[in-house]
Length: 245
Image (cartoon, rainbow, N blue to C red; front, side):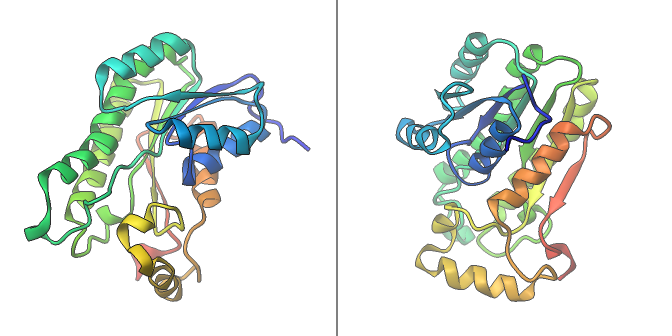
């Protein structure tokens, strides 16, 4: 049975073809929203569309959010929106020790997790009503940095600063971030390679929650921020107690 709560609302989810974004898209569709999932891979978007199976209320859009012309064209095409979410993160090659970091990999992280949200806000905010929202995804690395994670830690922290500033500038449109801990998504293939399962299991033993996160955990948090009209400029931590250990 479809849950009520988002009937007639229109939501753009950048990064909606996999992981946390896909889980959010599924939840919003179940609640009656019209959802646009966007990303760089047409093949992944097509697979997600087939898996979600709601052709009447689901659209896809191929876009590189680091390219301003593409972002501007997207918002011109889709028109009015109620909410914008980005879970996009291009971190391949970024988890390296300092002597091994290639600037191109670091630039991709900045483009996907900082410039992308900046451009989504710049061109998307005019399409939102005063009750609308933007929600971005930072991460635990900003609070528990580790060797090999300097670039991601820095960009997550920068994104949270951007969120606070945009919440002031774009008010009453609400701007927030979710900061996940370790979540079992395909992105871990870039971080841990063939040791993904072993790495996540070791963290699960450390966490007060007794497990690592699931994409649905983060989708729930984003859904809260979308729907709570009195929360703005905040970072919601959904990390199983990671900051405590």
